[in-house]
Length: 318
Image 1: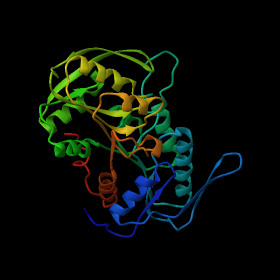
Image 2 (image 1 turned 135 degrees about the horizontal axis):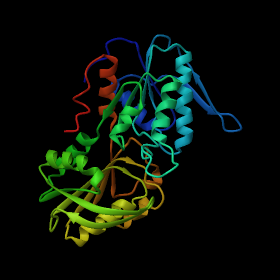
Image 3 (image 1 turned 30 degrees about the horizontal axis):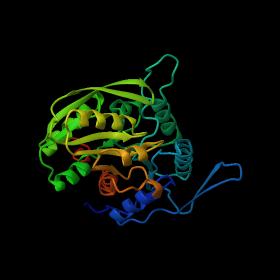
Image 4 (image 1 turned 90 degrees about the vertical axis):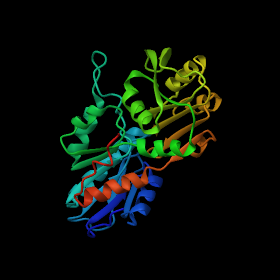
């Protein structure tokens, strides 16, 4: 890893994912900046920066994960505090970008909330965004400031390479995930298949068909997000029906809301590999779930941004 060019860099963290922030800090051998973040009696967020940041290159680590609205407001207040404290540049590190699934008008009279969030973050005073595995690629264009978009694919793919799985097929859980699945298949030297599914409602999915061959094969289902686990459950049932042998799943952002943990626990899945872009509470840390850290990748990106170096090799998903 490169070394820090000067002492102009300062790394701070909100409360959304402090374990990840501490790992990034250790990776960079750079202590986290001193902040006080609290709540007034009525619930308002209170922020105070406890050190001089004038003229510094500031990085704020704050995924907008659940509780989404609280973490979004905290992030906006942090950005404003650093802007008013005369920071030279403010880079917001958002490992998980909330509201990303509301990226278009798929029904009449609905908002495009992913664009609204981009506007608010920019207006608050952010100069640059560093994020990972956006749910929709076009969200990068919602920002009027530079966006560096990393992929967790190398971290997860290397983990599966070390397992040396045989007769491997990578299965996209839907048509929208084909690009990600193709990258995994290419990197792992595996075949590719696609689950053709029909969505009956926002939380209800019915798997319909399979494009490709999984009979007697080991299967990996990669995705960017596992929320309720309904899509994953349907995909697993479809693959079992078509003769898949051992089934693994992976995702970058483990929201795991609602019945997700029960669905994973009770499913035929051998293992679900996730990253730490979203903190995993103790009650969700079950034996089937393996958590990989994104800290080395995010830390290297932070260093390269600070040192004005290219990070294209880090967000190349191929």
